[in-house]
Length: 217
Image (spheres, one colour):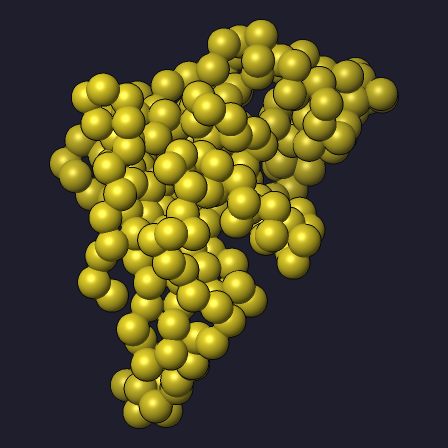
C-alpha cells in the first residue's frame, strides 16, 4: 500500500536565525569553520562533532554515514574507524570524500571536500588508548560492516576478550586507525527566509590561496 505523502509536501520551515555576508567571512576557510564550530559547540555540546562522511566505490556508487570529528587544524579533518569497513574499503580505492556538518538550530551547514589519507599507526594507537574500555573491546572484536549471524556472537566475543583483559587494555588492532581529509573546497550555507539562502564556496588555488564566491541558493 502506498502512503499518502501530501502532508509531507506541505511541511515548511522558515530559516530566520541569521545571515551570512561576504564581509563577514574570513579569508581562511579553516578559521571560518572554527568560528562556526565553536558556536555549534556552545549550542550542541558533543553533538556538534557529528558529520556525514560521503565516499564512493570503484563504480561511482556513493555511500554516506555519520562519523565523529576528532580533530581539525590547518592540515584538515580527522576521524577514526576500522579500515576494513565499507568506508575504509572505498577510501582505499577512491581516496576522495566529502564531509557535511549540519546544525539545525543555527540553520547552518558546512561541506568540506578533499583528498583523504591514512594517519600513522602511532596516531591511531594514541587515540585508541584514550577511548573508553568498552569501545576498545568492541573495536577489537568487530570486523566493521561484515555480516554476522547474531548479536549474541558479538556479546560472547566481548565477554571472552574481557576475561583476558579485565581492565580493557587491549592493543589497537592493525586494522583500526585514523584518516585525514585535506580540504580542497568548502561551502558555508546559512538558511534564510523564503529559501533565499546565503551560500559561499572556497576553492583552493594552485598558489595555496582560497578563491571565495557567493553561490545562488
